[in-house]
Amino acid sequence: MFTGYIYIIYSDDHSDVYIGSTKLDLDERLKQHELNLRKFKRGKYNYVSSYDILEQGNYQIDWLHKGEHKSRRSLRLVEGKIIKKFLKISVNDKLEGQGFN
Image (tube, rainbow, N blue to C red):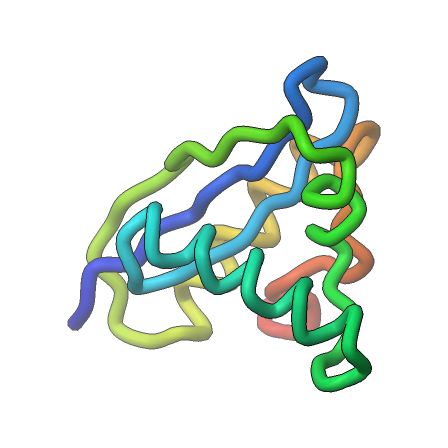
């Protein structure tokens, strides 16, 4: 068992959101997104749809869920359910948990 989190990165005007999952604390996870964006710009990392929000420059990150999980898969199932709630404004390019029914 581990403690897993679902987080949201959102633009200041709340027009765009990115939903993700992690075992890390909030600040550390956001730093990873920012570092990966810098690597992507240098051609050294893959594209992640959260970059669409980070590129805007004005964004926040908050927790949406904290819970005990038996596996990464169970955490991603929760993530997928939460993404579905935000589909109209989500920049997520894939729905986590698909195929895990």
